[in-house]
Image (tube, rainbow, N blue to C red; front, side, top):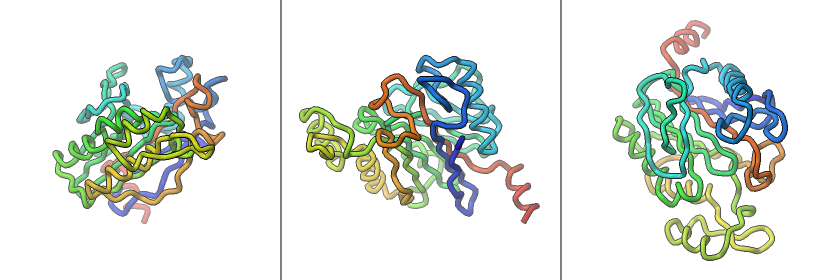
Length: 256
């Protein structure tokens, strides 16, 4: 499946996630690798990005990417992204309909956010360092600066490694749990672990943001998803969030 387009809300916000199938990359990146910095053939990555966008009804030129660095910086997107100009940030926010914000992951937590009333969306990459640094609150804060209201924001959390599988040394678990207690966990085999999705949900709850109750998929447990912890050299999944453009709205309105 090239992409899973989740149901939009009544005001035209769309959320979507890919799995690893339906693309053109070969081993060890098979098939739908969307990451451009993992050693895959650049032509295959571009082909995959085109396939994924078109499967979701998007123009590939309207998809905005990040050069993710495990920090908390947010970029405000005001137009299409010139090739090779992805900002070194871990969150994007825009109030421009038709632009799709993309986040790449292979165990980290992809967070998609939308306030369709204000016409503002955001995408955030919350790995362990980014979660600890506060990338999710920073993304929400950038949305508020553009006119969003926390109580109107809907968040969707995509596939990521779960708290039963993300084993870490006890001192690291304690360090992160001191910053975000909900991350404290144990693996299914009884060793110290971190639950990053739980930490993201806790941060969003404190901000007054509603998280949609989508079933969580653990990337390490799922053969349909890329997992860095399972495979090391592997591809990247993508999450997309966007607001309908005026053209989309006109087409849907005319077909009703």
